[in-house]
Length: 253
Ligand code: NAD
Image (cartoon, rainbow, N blue to C red):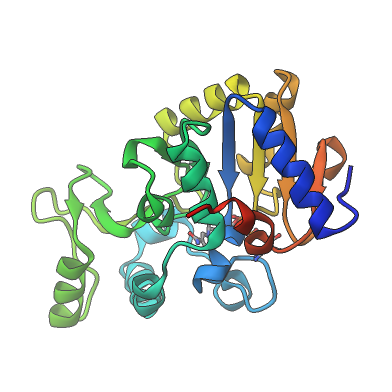
């Protein structure tokens, strides 16, 4: 059912939150646009400007690695300035209140952790862009370390231990999904009694695959997104309004 206006959407969502014992949110790039981080597919979004660099290309080509890191450094100021949005803060308040055990996210911006979620309770399906890892041995690196090498040597650095390329700790197209995160996410979707899909276009796997197991296990499904998604017909409530406006009333103090 589609909320006829923002106010009734917020009221119905409030009733569902009050009735729920275990809420699992699933978030996409739309929750972070209010924080100043562009999403992928909206006009002006990242995808309209840069073709994503697939994983095999990153591994095979120094030029691709240099370009990937140039793009990441170009986003430095944006990520550094980003603060949790009203959406992030509302979910953090429900987490603190014990209604949300953990959150599933496609986002890589670390803003759920910054809003108050314990790192272990943020299930990152696509990793995290605020630090780097060697793609061979997995050793973690600060972005500052990478930047220093990149500026000094004019090329993306390799791991000091195993000589394999160092990459942001994100999952690129063509890279395998983190198994543990996927397993936990599916389990949570099946266990909850209210599943909130927030700010995701729900077009790419695995995003598109989460609402259904939740529904099949008896949870209610709410979709908050300012444009239509292919899963709207399966939702108990669709709020097609701004995320900050919708979740703002749940931020608390
Ligand atoms: P997407 O860009 O495909 O979809 C975002 C959706 O949110 C769109 O449907 C858009 O209309 C909607 N939206 C944007 N701002 C909104 C607002 N204020 N209120 C309501 N709706 C709003 O994003 P996705 O489905 O998450 O897929 C993008 C992929 O790119 C993700 O998997 C993620 O890894 C990566 N990404 C992450 C970030 C981030 O970490 N913040 C940003 C861009 C892309």
